[in-house]
Image (cartoon, rainbow, N blue to C red; front, side, top):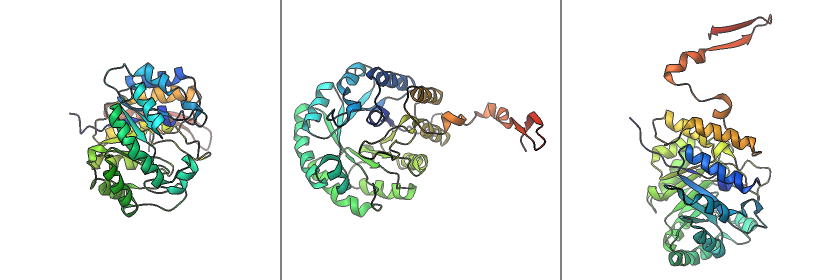
Length: 323
């Protein structure tokens, strides 16, 4: 019997290609492969200035190629009204505004403060209603960073109240540089859930400090509406060169969730194949499962107990039981 369902949103088509330029055909094939692997929810691209993020200049083309596929939910990231209108014209189901909890990063990245960004978001809410497109917001660096101290509920509270006042209830809380462990994840999610339903929360954790998969399991236990993942842990941010900017690895997260009794609706073998294909397309990736293989099925477990090794006398023994 299947366990509780967990909704995974694949963000590699946006997060990866904002840092690594590939032909449009590669992006389309990635989505097609992920759909065959069971993924139905995507952050497909960003509608941003092509001179700033040239890797996503083909956002409209990518949407045009995949939006007719049945049963998919296609979102995108935007930073201003022009991007919002472009997203609506491309047929996006939703657009997510890029809002930073870190004021210094906001000023460096987009040239306006967090407070000024909230004013823009308020104007965009009216435009989105006119266009008939769902509008949500990121809260990047929600747990702290990129260089400053950790953040918690006290720091989130005034931002949360402002978002509620604006009428934005679809939030993507992002641990953008991997500060949080499960207790901190729980603490901030509980605080956010006092303002919006858990089902309206998407949480995006990054694996910079090796805590990503543990945090995914915590998010599933909390019942968060959607968990963001990135195939092969791929991705990056142009404003943070040299840092690991990928999301938590899709195939590693999917395996952990399935082993914990959750139903992700995904085919792990197909995810691994797609991660390896992406690596072959020239996009660097991380992750564990695709390198060492999944945990063997119970019926095949004895096969995993045979292997080869070399003794100190250089004599090789084949297929002996592990001690």
